[in-house]
Image (cartoon, rainbow, N blue to C red):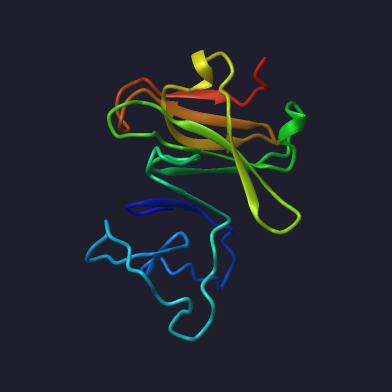
Length: 170
């Protein structure tokens, strides 16, 4: 989930408050001036409880890695076809910009200290490892294998939609 400058991935649990009206990821947010984050903001909700932190945050700016403009939630990989992804959270970003189909696949794993490390995944069979499509959703079968849903068009129109099975790059 993101708004103007950052995208975030959260572990949603009952009772957690992520401060989405006052924060964008770990950054302060002002709806009246979304392009300029305030220097400080509340770290607690109205009841005094600490706001929950995202596990992953990344900017809309190409100056950092990872980056993108709209996180697409995925799944914890529980399949057996790609052992190096076992137990990792596989997700995507819709595209790197609004004019070109350039979605990105990511895998994230939790470190011993509770932080998360994110890396870009190569898309098998695609030049340079980039999917060159808008990533719209993910699915998972009964064996824990993942599927990526994509489109060559900006919105939910046309017949360019595809379902890709998540397979190891050769």
